[in-house]
Image (cartoon, rainbow, N blue to C red; front, side, top):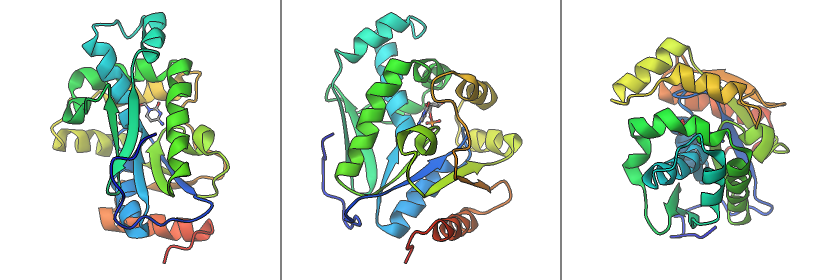
Length: 228
Ligand code: DC
């Protein structure tokens, strides 16, 4: 992993710790993780962006996402650098920042296929774990509490009603078949979306963002984190 910039005020604890935020698409994981990172002085890592970045590269190279061997061979030919800019994680592939292109409909439609490939997951999990060598983090994704950091005591599974999640995507102006993506992410054999052992479930269907953050901080206090 490379760091682009020093964060403003990361909590530089030794040993570093990870807060795992998992949940389905559009459940509000990213917003919650970002707010928690701001509140606690940690770095927020969006692991979904890493799967999206590999998908971006696959499509850019005109590789069929279902051609698993071709996707795996691409992994040896791309340079992925993960870093952070302030509290936010960043990712570049071969020196290029994919940026907003990661949210394009073609990425939404194909990312679950790429994320189901075990070799892709192993490649990215190494990078995800690498963040802990530098700082304490809030990482959001699908398998953070179950596979990436199974031993962290700080785990939240964020959920919301499917209708609420679909409406959030529409509000964001995004084309995203979240039900289809959730089914693919939950039923794959490699690290499916599950409620990790020890995770507390936070349903934010009827919560404002700020109420969701307060509820998450309360959960983390119960899990033993000093949130002051
Ligand atoms: O969080 P997101 O919607 O940006 O994630 C995009 C896709 O990446 C998601 O459909 C499944 C995959 N993903 C994953 O398999 N494991 C993670 N830790 C994060 C994301």
